[in-house]
Image 1 (cartoon, rainbow, N blue to C red):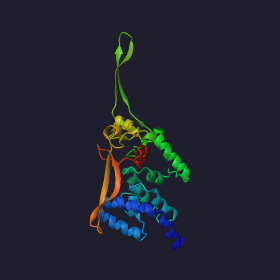
Image 2: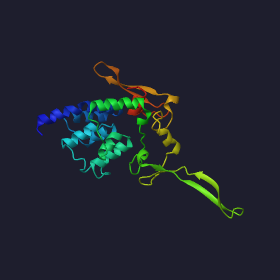
Image 3: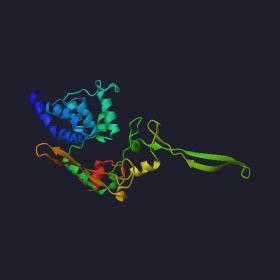
Image 4: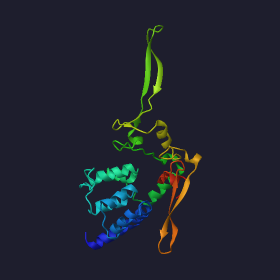
Length: 257
């Protein structure tokens, strides 16, 4: 690829990189400076991909792979991971970035037809069944709503002299939840929380019904050095109970975007 082709292609992801930059500025101004310098120099490295994965921007990951800028299967600068891909998979899992996670494990299907995207968006707003809940197993990273999860019941028996056979005397559901894919005992999750997550009305973190407790609208402000005042930057919608930000499907369903 010659320089002009690369510059032309780079324009395709400038909008998404700018969005990542705005989010990062609010989170860590010092890191934002380093990130902005890399973007202005078109130097996309593992640090840039870290934030693309964190904020769920598949376009940036596709760009580096399609243009052979970075080998995602090469060694990571983070020695805890054997490759950049494994590092980014862990980031996507930790921040529940479903699109980048699916892309990195080879399970991402992009919708290329604009009319199809608009139709699907309309269906998501009109049909609650289009919402797919997500809870990633911390051990194998599979979505337990797709791979399945299981619970156990403890059943006690005793011998009945009248019937001359064993009879059930008690039945108790075990509170533990196991991933069907790897049989891992998932800590800090209840059956009730997983059931709540099946509804688009419920917060994806704490499970509370948003139609009952409401939604917080937050406007992040950034300081404009030129005008010497704070200006509105990013608006988010959050659960008032745990401050978890609503996901894309919830925001569309409640007509917030």
